Image (cartoon, rainbow, N blue to C red; front, side, top):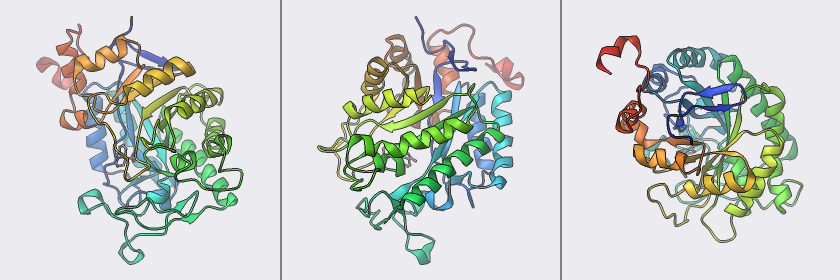
Length: 356
Ligand code: 531
């Protein structure tokens, strides 16, 4: 039976264990470029023993950034600084992944530590783009401009170009961001998508943006490398996107060559009441894995080694993703190996071997 330190193989890629680092925005870029911060942050987590490290939501176009500090991959100039990071991560045994993203109606906001509200144009903001001209609400009150069909195609092409650049930068795992109230999730949910054309209305129409984007990326992303998708499996709101639709979407994505679904939730509705607690989203990874027959990652309030190990042993998910637990402790996987009596523990880098 598999456990937290059993390897996981998807296509030609083998993770040394079932611990992944969830994509986490660092808001530490200028013009989308990766910096020394990213090298140290992502590099430390490779040395700390994670099997997979997914780089933060990386915008496929400048207007797809949540904030002006977001990472981006819309130009050739983004490749080199990312290559430096992936080279280091691979050297230390981690598989480098990247989350490709477009923030939709949530784009153009201040950095979180500056309040996180939508910025006026004069303050460096811009008019966000979305399926429908409906503001998210609260501090993200700017009304987005409704995308035209040619603009939708353009964005789908941007995702494909971004995937090609990710490959050139050395990434071996791509995750398409279709969660947390950003563009692709906005198409999925009837609460944010009120279009009357082929991209809105029925379930078939609401999933069209993501399915076509997946197809465009799969066409340029090598056959031997994993392609994955993060979903918000429920809006936690009556009349919104929900787990039943997520299961059906998972089946369709699998047919398009998606290898794993990263099962998150929420972020699409400002007023949703979310029952946050330890492992509160694992139920979605478990259900999609069972009912759609696709590998899943569990994420959200997974903080303890035994808890993570139990999720894998019980077959509730194939992979666990750490977020805040990994920010608190870059060496979480190495510490978990010791706690779970894993022998031998993770390979230490030569420089640290006598202290491991
Ligand atoms: C936090 C968040 C998690 C789950 C639901 C809603 C919000 N994050 C999500 C991030 C941006 C910052 C806040 C992304 O997904 C890019």
